[in-house]
Image (cartoon, rainbow, N blue to C red; front, side):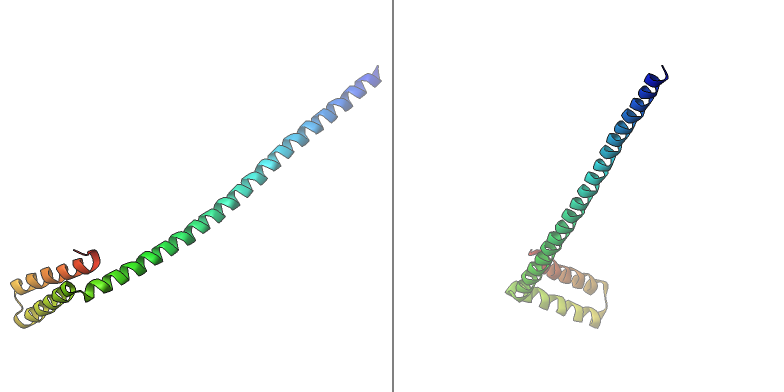
Length: 117
């Protein structure tokens, strides 16, 4: 009678070992998949950052070119001259009205160059 109990104990140990192995294998597989997903995610974020940086550089370059073109237009030159004239008047007379007109004129120039209106 001792022998069947012994075999039953060995069977239980084997079943426990197989079940533990399967659970451990599933856990390791899940950890590996999570690691691979994080690596892909990191790579995608890096690629997105590179693309965004290129877009920002292109936009800045385009904006700088546009601003330079606006500075060279008749309106841009006229607004710049007006700003310079009011700066000179403010330095010469140093009054609130010349200061306000200088600020208004120079703001108009900056707004035209940066925004186009």
